[in-house]
Length: 437
Image (cartoon, helix red, strand yellow):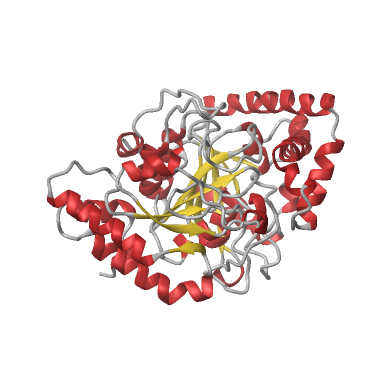
């Protein structure tokens, strides 16, 4: 078996049992990176010798009888907006070229404590916004991988690593996962700490993960969730063990199919595929409350204001920034305080309006993107089907279940109740098990 076909959970188990060494596994991943990275260009910082050194140290630790973490010896790629003590963190901008953090962000520290090897830093769009980086979609090198977590999604899709970390403020985890055809989670707002991560919007920023299975998403969440006083929005959820919850699979999941007010933004092929899929899985069709149609404008207002506040200095300092980023900062500075506060208030109302759905459904099914990845790497695609869920902070998953033109992936997005992320993963696992193999 090709070692790079292993999931993170399979690799961790093999290493813990002594069937495989961390060095062997990391060497196999680095060999694949050497073969495919020139085309995919998922990484912005990569040091193979440093990755092998981490692996050897972990093998030595295991040989000495040390207690192993759940990700012992597993290489993880991390988006280049997460501070790492051993790699630069440059935010996808020449303004921060060469920036060297003094310490790891909370998420990276938790990954290391669990035995993960931080194999490298992945490409992000400029300041995790719209201006794309160099990464190409492994499914079709002439198409965008999506953004802003471009490199993380592409690295998993190309089999370079089994796990990668990204972030989402609008659609930056779920959209590239859909375009690249991988599993991904955007957890509930406040479930995973963002301390030491570039701040775009405290109200909207989420830390997420990419993998090749639902089980690996549960494994990653077990490692990175938890309250952190250094994140002002961190919440002490009474969240059960993800893997334990996932193991307790129900025979079926109750699913609701929601078109949302932006349904017509999906292309005809995608709409037809979802209508058929909803019928196949027996999802009950429901409508979003009409008043929620204003949610997309509210998300834009909040994002523009908070990015102007947090990142406006990059424009004011005269550094090199894209026109798209400059225009957003200008837009945010024009939004009035009353409009911003109303948008924050309405975001809570939108979330409350959806909660009634979860009294009769385990998850809501929607498209992840309007269609397959667009051609060209000068775009990151439309995040419109992710916007509502980022605004309201509800957890979402991407499941690579559908295909469009040329067999390219179209993601199925599942949304769940806040703080019930483990149960959302369990609903996804039940759905996958019920589908024809």
